[in-house]
Length: 265
Image 1: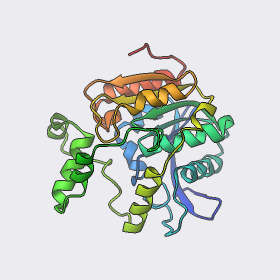
Image 2: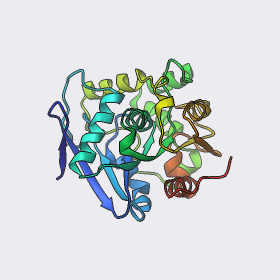
Image 3: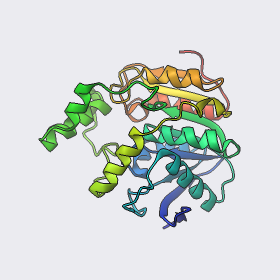
């Protein structure tokens, strides 16, 4: 099993699949590399894809320390690229992975080719937060009801009926509670607003029009803050647009990564 070593000694599991230009795929909060399983093969057919388990998830180490942050996750991602022998990669980050990707592109522009930011935000101080009803639905005392609420935020009812699972976007079930809490705090404390104008990579912002988990209003905020960024919205999609609406979203991302800018939405 391949592991990278972070600056503080944490072991980070990663995988490399496919061939072609390198592409780093960054998962959402409290999730491991399996987040990308439903669509990774489509990207690996045209790119050398790199996926990783964040600290606290999957096969990576799970330190109970104050080392969890989106800038820190970006540094961990660089350690993975270094271990894989990749000097420069395209980056596609979704949800908290998009927050991590913002720091990677802003702080280390020489390491990032093209950038895709999916279903993400610039952070609470300047972004649009999910509504209180969404927060309440996720902390119900009934675990089954809370899981269903999360499923409904990720996918449409039609998709849940058509594809009953397994779903890899609901969090790594093996995570200890302290790591899950530290991931939640890292994502909640993200604030890249002042850093976004430093991003020089050609950037595409993707977002579902029906995303209440990370409100769609964050997409134009990001696109307007990053110089030259393009924006495309996926009609009818919720938070996991990249999976349920892969027939539309994957060609958009692939085309952009190959240098074909999508037409305005």
